[in-house]
Amino acid sequence: MRGDEETPALLAEMEALRDEVSRDGRRRWEAFRADVDRTPFAVGALNLAHYLALRRRDHRALQRALMLRGLSSLGRLEGRVLATLDAATVALAALAGEETCRHAPSQRQFFRGETRLRAATERLFGPARPERQGRILVTLPSEAADDPALVAGLARAGADALRINCAHDDPEAWRAMIAHARAAERETGRRLRILMDIAGPKIRTGAVLAPDERARIGVGDRLLLARTLAPGFAQSFPFQATCTAPEVLDAVGVGARVAVDDGRFSGRVVARAHDGLVVAIDQAKLGGARLKPEKGLNFPETALALDPLTDKDRADLDVVAREADLVGYSFVQTAGDIRRLQAELAARTSRWREIGLVAKIETPVAVRNLPEIMVAAAGRQPFAVMIARGDLAVEIGFARLAEMQEELLWLAEAAHVPVIWATQVLERLVKSGLPSRGEMTDAAMAARAECVMLNKGPNVEAAVDALDGLFRRMGEHQSKKTPTLRALRTW
Image 1 (cartoon, helix red, strand yellow):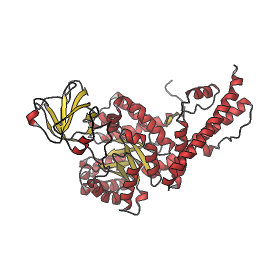
Image 2: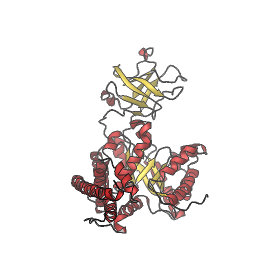
Image 3: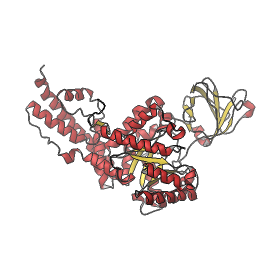
Image 4: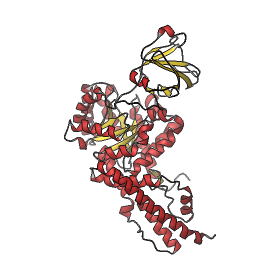
């Protein structure tokens, strides 16, 4: 069959697809509508609904057929679903010599999603710097409370926002950090946004028992994870640990997966014993890892009925509501979790809708519920998604992290919601002074997010400077996942 005979059939397929996406997207939008009080987000919520409707099907064959005709492959439509379908359909109709009821979108209509995403980013993190769109968020160490020069150095190097981790220090220290940030603003003439990250219900190991200080737990060992240590059973269970949230042990069944210390070792529950869990370790570092107190515990295959707002979080929100530009929310799982935090903020300040909300996506449940989480949050206040790659990797498996972070970027872009790319960005540079080759590539990929978070460390100022330069260079080559085709200068 000749190509000109295939084009009318392809046009009919595009027309049918456009109708289906519009119809199914409108149905999803009706479910979202009750949560959308902010007019600027309504367009994003509707586009998200269309995107979800589109991505229910596999469009790889359609993409190739469009590419063959020099048309859009649909591979960059996240922020403009219907506009892209309309543009491709109008062009196809011209090729086929047929009429269509679709209209080619104007330039303003086609790029409206990009415009709204830039506006949302500016609302949260401030205006972009010259020649650099991506924002840089830096976690402050405890020393920042007593060292104004540290904060000023970060501001001069190019930081746009500062993160205060409320799991550490106290309100007096947090206020001192913020005062130093305001002094740095006066020096640099540029506002620094303050993100205060409430701790949430982090589950950790408590007391531990091991054969000796040098003993390492590895593949083939068994870990007794229980409410209390059982030294009398050390011969059967030489490695033991308690859990800081012992109630979760009742929810974890035999066969469920357990990960310890950011996934340094993990295994499956093979039995219950001594009011706890027996975990057979099947993944660990070569040579094993030390069992230590105060290390994170993850239960990726278990639904934990934990309150994402602890008593400490509620106390900390008294300070956050007065001092912060943005609040970071850990362990978000559902839209209901978002509404609870909004109610807590509303009880503390009339300006709660001006405070940016950052939801940390770190569990499979949160991933599944992300559309509803985004609508509930961005529908009422400025909002960003944080891809919390540390916990997320442990929860979904390291092998799936790269794939999942791409999907989270796409979904957030469809909703015109900014993304913070977090966890171990330029980690070796921050901590030791020299980056690895792999982490420089990772940081370049992070430039597709609207903001990148650096963690604290002795060389963090140099890391801010390196990331600033990397953003400027990558911005010339790529916008989100779209190459910009800047002239190449190497050849």
